[in-house]
Structure formats: structure tokens, C-alpha cells
Amino acid sequence: MITKEKLERLKRELPSPPQNALKILNVLKDPDSGAEEVEEILRYDPGLTADVLKMANSAYFGFPNRIGSVKQAVVLLGWKKISDLVMVSCMNSVMDRGVEGYDLEKGELWRHSVAVSVTSEVLAQELGIKGIDEIFTASLLHDIGKVLLGMEVKEQIKNPNLFFEGSQSFDSVEKEYLGLDHAEAGAEILSMWGLPERTINAVRFHHKPDESPYADNMLDIIHISDTLCIMLGFTAGKEGLKYHPSSNAAKRLALSQLTMEKAASYTKEKMNQLLNV
Amino acid sequence: MRIIVDVGDMKVSKNGDELVTHALGSCLGLTVWDPVAKVGGLLHAMLPLSKINPEKAEENPYMFVDTGVPALFRAFYQLGGKKERAVIKAAGCGAPLGDDRIFKIGERNLVVLKKLLWKNNLLLAAEDTGGIQSRTLYFDISSGTVIIQTSGNKRVL
Image (tube, rainbow over all chains, first blue to last red; front, top):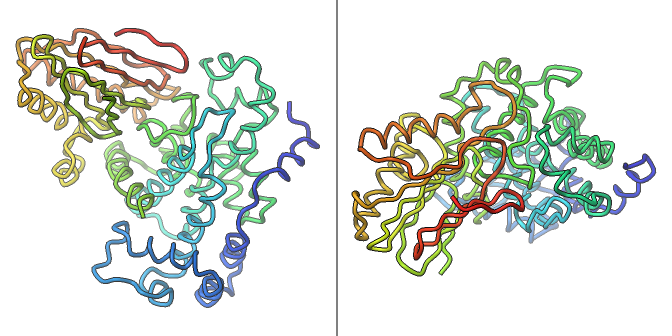
């Protein structure tokens, strides 16, 4: 079991995100901030700038002409998209690592996170849902709790077979053995980092969208995208398909089988476009 | 040589090689083998029908069962495999918990495969499909042996 004190200690032991990721998150939260602040953050970080420009010039966006400066990128993509790319670049260092307790090899969690992010974006677009600017970052961070719980799974779970091979949903197994599941652990981390409340809530309920205190189509989309990526082999763990997707989330989104499968058909290409820059 | 077949991809190979694919959830893993010519192929298809995105199917037929299976057989024949000797095995096609139809992509993948095989007078020699496990598939082209691994357990298909 993970006690309150233990959780605080684990949170402190986590690798911290680069300063610039936290700065970007603050810009996103502040309605008076915007393009200027994003450009300001990038101005002092040539490595980050180069990374963001590489992604902006990737096939993912498919601009015919080369984007040569942050200013130009902000004009073409908008500052919110640029902040997404800053998050991809910054969070890579925290999430592109192996997670021992879950038997995740280096890169697996990151690949799953990027797959869910691009799938969420495509789904939102296919469903014509606008005004959810946080969806990319929330999707990218939805499983970050695994990084924290992984340390404990390795320590505490003496019989991994019982932990991974039952037939109940895996989040309930985590809760039973550890006292909290990776979604709750993720929400704890994100509230420590000061992310917007809606993002924290979406991460907390990404396996149980029906239990969220308020209905949120961003949460429902992340839930469906995560389910799709788990089903289609862009997975993140030994637990396989052991989750219980919500029929209500699909209904709330008026999601058809066709729309869902169509969105899924873009996942691989878009994920590779973002990963291979 | 060990050759990894990615999600939404297909590889054919000859004697001496091993084809491997990971993380078969609701995707279909399909092997075809010719015991005389000692050639074989492995498909890892994600979605049942290409009509949901014909443009994508044009670009990558292996993403869909209805375009991936014919493409697998064409490549298998090209390498010297013969239809009358083809040994075909299927794995994957799992589903998450619960019984909502919308999440049964795996079942739909299997139905489309079986229709295709039936239309072409082909039969499955073995299958390890359904369930909530994620599978890894190892296919030894020399012996035709297909091994399915689900977290820790290995079995011959």
C-alpha cells in the first residue's frame, strides 16, 4: 500500500520536468498570456527552439515551405500548437524511459503517450469538437502516473503474475494492491506541477470517465483514444487489454464505429511523423 | 535473422528467418507458410475494412484485413509459396473488458478474415484469438512453428 507520506516521497523522487515546460503550462493557464510569452521562453533556449522548429517542419503539419523562425511558426500554427510542441520536447526527458515495475522498455510509454495525443486530436477533429486546447497535453501526460507507481510495483509486488494476469480491470488491481491507480497517481503529479484543473481531472478519470464530477468531452475523447491505442498495439504495459471502456463516453460523444475506426487509421502515421523528427 | 513486423505491416521471408510481431491486441496476426518451399509471411493488420479510409489503404494495405490478407498472399506466392500447400494460422483479435459492440474491433477483424478465407477456399490450420491478453507472435520459417506468448506464458500454435 502507498500511504500518504509515501506518495509525497515518491512525488519528490520523480524526475522533475524542465523549467520551460512549467513556464509553458503557466502561459497556457493565464488568459492574458499568449504568443509573446511563448516566444520569450523559446528565445533563451536554442535547443528547445531547434526541436520545436524541427517538429513544425515535419510531415505532421505538412507545410510546403520551410518554417525558419519561432515567429513564423507561431503565425502559421498558432501559439497553442507551439506550446504543445514545447511540451513534447520537454516531457520527452521525463517519459521516454523504461518503467521497470510495468515492464515497459525505454520508449514504450512515450510512444503510447504520443499515439494517444495524435489520436485524441484526430478524434476531436472528426467529431467537430472545438475549444479543447488542452487535449494534446492532457493526452500526452495521461499515463505519467505509471512512472511514479512503477517504482512501487517493483518494490511491493512480490508476485507479478497475480498483479498482471487477473481478469479484472487493471486500474482496480492497482488500487487493490497499491491503494491508488496510475490515473490517480498521474493526477497527483500534475497538481504538484500546477496544471490546469480540467487537465488534472481528465488524467484522474481517464479510465473511469463516468465517475468524473462533471461531464467533459475532452475526458471522453482521451478515454476513447487511450482505449483505441491499447487495442491497436500502441500499448503501454504488460496488462494488455484489461480495461473496461465506457459505453457512456462513446454515447456522450455520439461516436460511431466508422468515426472511431477512421480516427484510428491515422494514428500510426501521425505518431511516426511526430516521433521521427 | 529475426525480422520484426510492426503494427499495420507485413513481411515475407524464407528459410532460416524468424518473423516476430508484438502487442497483438485487437489486431489480427496472420501467418502463412509453405512447408515445401520453406517460405512464409506474417501480417499484423489493425482494422477490418479499408472502406473507412481508402486513401490510407492505398498507401498501406497492411493496415486493413480486407486489403492486407490479399497483399500477404500475393507476396507469399511471389516468393514461391503455393496456395495448395499454404498453412494458415491466426492470432490476436482480442477485446477489452465489457460487451459494448463498438469496442469489438478484434471480432470484426476475425469475421472479415474468415469471410476472405472462405471465399478463397482456404482454411485456418489453427487459431489463438479473442480474450483480454496482448500477444506476441514468433514464426519460425524453417519449421513453420508459430509460438504465442502472453505475459510469461508461451505456447505452440
